[in-house]
Length: 562
Image (cartoon, rainbow, N blue to C red; front, side, top):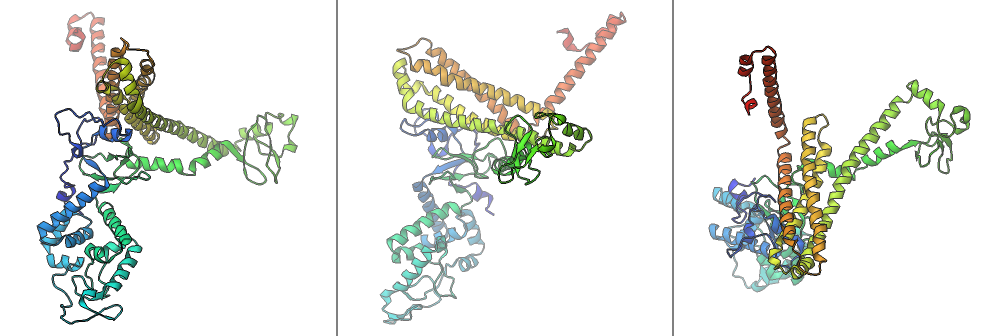
């Protein structure tokens, strides 16, 4: 395990709260001037970068390839200077200890000799240097002049041709080439990237360097690649805030803990169950059970797609039967209720013959309807969020400039529109996952469910008002012939709705992250208040009923005098 100092190191980044609503600043992109950072980028940047910037996290930083290389070289140089070893040896040490600078220091100063032996960094060669004019290669056993012979720290001599073949074969086998050892079977001396740079072909060098770069992310506990398809950015994360949602420069937001799509305030366990349920066959089976019956002859499931009870199975079975009682249709007719009823079924049902089957079918139907209710709203908010992201892109690239010209207003004063779109995008994401939360909220916890549905309803109502305002009210100003005197009122209205919606969702997020624990205290306060008022009113009534103003007055709640 990494030490506490190492876990909080992460290239001197400060730990902070990863919160869309907190208004923090990103340490990776500090502004040099005194202007406030509104979290916006230049007009030619895409909406994804705006979202990542606007979220303004302090506990993670998105890294491009050049940033990764710089951090990697910084770590190598730091270890090299502190331990007084070469950069090649420092890189071997860091790879062995998963690029944890703190752990390298701890292990090295605790037992340098053991670390050297384990990693393969030898202080002195196993085979002493020779002054012979020719040396024998340990692989092909041919004799070569010293300049054609190469070796690592152990001193085992091998010709450059054999070294090249050995390195090429290992590189083509995959990332294991980063842990390359001396070709001598009995030797554990490590082969560093200096040997690869010296003897490998350009193609093999490129492969090796790619493996070397990727190992810095894949072996590092504080870094991960962005899981979005085709994205080559990485995320450097600092533990401690309790929030794992991070945003990449490619616009994809994901959970650092489970690498699924960002799902705050819902926990990873709920998300995992929800995603599994969405992809599992269980819902298909529930649908089949709720909406079909097995053919009495071939047992294949049959869906009733017309009004009457006369069913005919598909070829080659072609069995004709009654949908209700599953009996042969030849036994049915006017005497059994006709095409739209079945007396046999009604009699059998009264006798209890169909109770268990109907109960299972009804349970499956209820379960399917409940799941469909939450899934449709989950998917609908996802679709709305994607549309909002496209609208944000259009607003950034086209609408702001157009609106600025028509309303004679600088684009710098139209940032409130982008703020509204960014708030909508984030709120759609939160609202989407609240439906997964609601699906798994136990039915018996009635108070929590009522509190949850109240908060969710208030947040959703506020979001719909904001979305409608920025989507429809803005259109009239974009289509106007010239400046409108109502534009300032629109600005005030939209900014106010953005703020109100932000507060609604902030309350919703906090409540869900606390497990709706506030509902208990609210219920207790409500019960206490109701009990207190009831006692006061009862005492007051009794006093007046007895004609004793003194008794009635002495039992009053002080609030009754207000």
